Length: 205
Image (cartoon, rainbow, N blue to C red; front, side, top):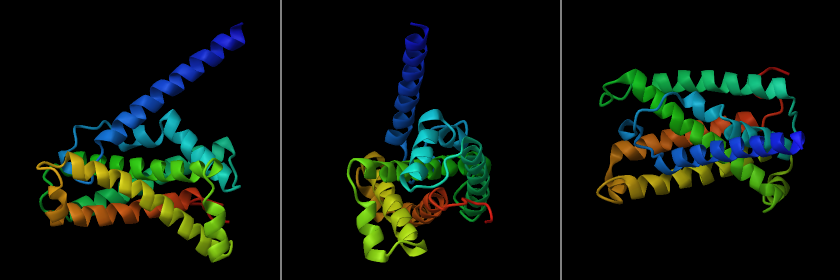
């Protein structure tokens, strides 16, 4: 009975975390400077549901899923993201509160990376990775293409949000600043998803 109660509590906590995760996704756009105040991009990347997506993405790619390794990989990725986002935001003259907006951009990147991981996990029920690997022969090129396609799928989700949430609706199509940041975010997400499905992550062999 105690085991069932523990399982039920764990399932409820995961469901609550998943709901919070998708609530963030529904609000995420490429125009990060207009997003509401976000505590930290790390809250998205290291949340229980997002961490499971990263874990199962590596599992789906038949990579090491050692808990301590995955935890270290997530922390290292977060540090890289913060550094990259901090540098990029510094070059946008229209961003006034650099630190707050760096955190917002990191959050957008975290959402993109975890969504990309989710599309890799989706291969379990809707197989697509095997086809890519056959086309490009298994190896670094195939892994890069898998990461790129998963990242692009995640980018499309955020892009749809951006089109619908930017007022007037669909005005993002004609906003050069949003288009530039959308392209930059795609690059960041491709890099992040690529690191998730790299055998040694950010660490040397």
